[in-house]
Structures are given as C-alpha cells and as structure tokens.
Image 1 (cartoon, rainbow, N blue to C red):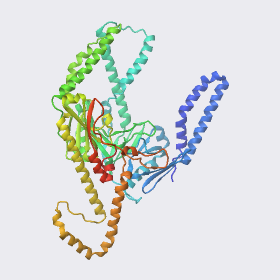
Image 2 (cartoon, rainbow, N blue to C red):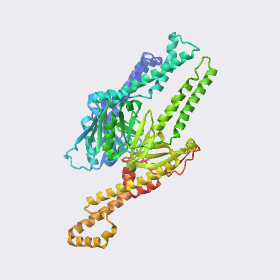
Image 3 (cartoon, rainbow, N blue to C red):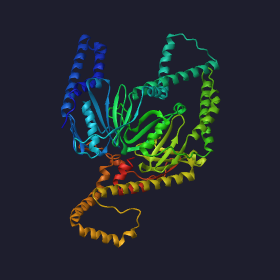
Image 4 (tube, rainbow, N blue to C red):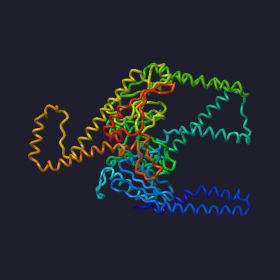
Length: 623
C-alpha cells in the first residue's frame, strides 16, 4: 500500500485552519476584549493555538490512515480516521483521471488526483495530495490497466498532438468570450453601493426627463456589457492558458489553466456527445468551440470539494479554433460531417415573434404600472420600440434550429446567441421522448428529445429537435428507436465476433445463407474434428468456459459494467449504498401535468439492452 505525500500534512492543515484561525484571531482582538479585556484576548489566542494543534493532529492521523494501491483489476483506497472506509474501484468504470494543481501546490510539488466515474454524485476517488510525479504515474498506470496491460515495461502508446492553443488564439478566446453571470452581480453591487455613494456625494440627477432616463438606461446596459466582456476575457485566459489536446492510444489527454493547472484524460469509448458551440461574434469571424461530454463529471471539474461544477456536463476539447478545424476533429473522432438540417415549419417564425413580443408587452405593462405609482416619470413606452427587434429575433431563432439523421448519428442545432450543434451516436441514446406543451398543441408541433447518459434533460443538455410537425415528430421518434436497435445489434454482433476470434472459433460469414451451410457444413465440421482431435480437447473446455463467461456476463455484467448507474466501486462503508435506485426506471406513457403531454420511448431499447448487459452500460450509459 502507498501513502500520500508527507507534504500533504502541513498543506492540508494550513488549508483547513486558515479560515478558522482568521475568525478566531479577529474575535480575539475585537470582540474578545468584551469578555475580560486583555485576558479575554489572551484566551482567544490560546483557543486559536488549540484549534491549530487539533487540526494538525487530525491531518497527521489522516495521513497515517490513508493508503491506496493499484492492483491488476481495481484501485483500492483505505481511509478514515474515526470510521474506516475500504473502497475498490474497478478500472473499467473509471471515466477520467484528472490532475489539478494550484499555484501553492505547484510551489511545493504536490497535486490532487480525482477519479471520476459515471453515474456518481461526486468524485468517486480523490487523492489529496501526492507528488506530481506520482500523480502522472497513477494516471498512466490506470490508462494502461484499463487497456488490459499487465507488463509494466510495455511501451507507452504514441502521442498525437491534436490541438495547441497559441497566445494569439488565447487572446481571441478572451476577446470572443462573454460571461453572462456578471449582469446580475453588477446589478446587486450597484444597487447596494450606489445609495451609499449617493449619500456622500451630491450628484445632480435630472428629474422628470424621459430623455435623461433613457440615456441612463443605455449607459447602464453598456456598462454591464463592458464589465461582462472583461470578466469573460479574464476567465477564458485563466482557464485555457497553455491548452494542449493530445491523443494517447484510446484516450484524449488535455492540459490547461494558469492559476489552477489541470491535466486530465477523456476515454474515447466513453464519449456520449460532441457539441460545436458558437455565438454571433464567433460565427462572424469563423470560429467555434468543441465540447465533449462523458457520462461522468465534466473533465477538469473538482466535485469533491465543491469548487467545481456540480453534476454532469461538458468540457472544452477545443476552446476556440476555426470552424473547419473543429468540424475536421469531429469527423476524425466520430466519422460524421456537418449535415443538411431540416428546420421547423415556416409558420413557427410567427410563434417566436409573438413570444418575444408578449415579453415586451409584459415589460411595458410593468413599467406603466410603476409609472402610475411612483412619483418620478418613467419612460414606460421604451420596450415598445423593440417590437421590430422581437420579429427579427424570432426569424433568427427559427433559422438556427433544425435536426438531421446522419448514417450513425442524430444531429441537432439550436440557439442563436449561444448556438449548439450536438452529435449523438444512435447507440448512445438512452430514451427518446416526444413532448407537446399546451402552446405547441395550438401550433401542431412537438419536441423530440434524445436523452443520453451524459446529459441532463431538465436543463436542456440533450439533443433536441424543437417545434417540428406532429407527424414528423412521431416518425422521427420511431426512426430513432429503430436505428438505436440496429446500432446496438451491430455492436453486439461485432463484440461477439471479437470474442469468437479471441477463442479461435471461426464465425460464419454473415452474407452467406443458412442453406449454404446445411448438412455440408456439419459434415465439414465433423471431418475437421476427426482430423484434429487435439484441437477438440482444447476447444471444448474453451467453448465451455466461453459459454460460462457469457452466462456470467448476462447475470452479473450489468451490475459490474454499469458505469453510468451503479456506484463506481465496492464500498464497505454502510453509507455508500450505490445507485441501484437509478435502475428502477419506469417507462413514461404520458405527462401528468396539465400544461403539456409527452410520449417516451425506451422500453424496447431497455429490453434490447437487457439481452446484453454491456450494451446497457457501455453503449448507452445511465440515466
């Protein structure tokens, strides 16, 4: 068993005690004097010392009680100071092995290792902290053992550099980035600070002037846009500084980050969805972003300590490149090119225009009501000037929506300000859902969603064909179900042939008719057996073992290989009860809500995958 780095003890102790010590020190030199003056402050200092010693003692005990080991099949972790926890994480369930280092960690030469698995609610395994060399060793060893390697001296797979972000491209990433979270923060900050500043500074504000009020609103909007753009620029530069993407065997490996340096892996066989994302600025200059999505946490996220993104999501495989280059990488990874999309019916343009106009109408009514009750004049009619903009926005929304059925992928496109083109392999589709809201029923359209294990449909993370004709939606749903069955059948057949080849069994050619074999094939097989008795003695046990293995797979692999539903490892902690509830999915036959209705298809696919448990996990992932 291997221990963490000894430097992790002081680092973790300082990290944990910093906030506590600061709070107690502040109390000691301010509020502590109220409880005895100097003696109260001295007591607080003593309390700070006791807390520091207690934290240091706990971290030392944590270091001595934390051990891990890379076995041929699992990564074993033993931890716990007061309650012991033994965990075995099979390599086949590990989605990503991410290494993260902030500035302080880089100075002392340590790193955090996060092992992400599909379907878990948090990081499945976390080593905090090991030396950077040990972290790289763990990453490469897990990748080698996942490939089935047993020889520690085997050569590393060849590395192929797919993309490297140059300083010029990094500046373009920042210039074309926009952080939408900033407007709310600016509003809260301004509404809090401005009254305080105004109480000290006598600023003459014109009252009762509609022109002045309108100019103030425009100035505020421009200020918020400028601050949001500056924040997006800084965030992009910090996140994607030194970005590199390489292919190593059957994995994608990336490095990125200025203050927090990430080094992670993305298994190619765990990819759920590829997404090309852009906005009006990127489209204007011919750039796009490529996102990859697996069934686990987003690569590079740090879910264990709450600092990263919670739940599942995407990570940029290419933060910014020319659109042709991004499409070329998609073709290289998935063998699919940008198709010709079939958009919503023409009449839907009016629906979008009406929707945006109603929003403007509601804003106008709200301002008019405020104008009646507030003493200062408010230009309540300003939103009405944006009605032509609403019409144009509706047309743009309609133009940028569509779907396509490629040979092996379902492709969708949605959005104008943030347009996303999603490529989903048919065998990755989890459930096909058709929904109609009360408003869509009026326009005789539906929305068809292809749910995958890597996305969360409640937040719009799935491939979705929005506002298509009702008849086309029903046909699309049936087509997706059919292609899903065909894709799963083809993959199952390919896997079976691979197993037979590994056992030395020659499979019948699929294009020959069964009649061609008949008795002649049986006779040939008997002759072969009579001529090679040694092979029979070896093949029969092998075939029996293969049959037993097939039965074991049928009975147990669904629980073993369900990276996307079960708990990622064997956990002897009584609190870790797995995620078996996720397997109790029931087929939806309708939406109980009044506001819409839905038709969900998935039971046939579930039955199909029940025949081959590996398909229900590796091919489709978990809901």
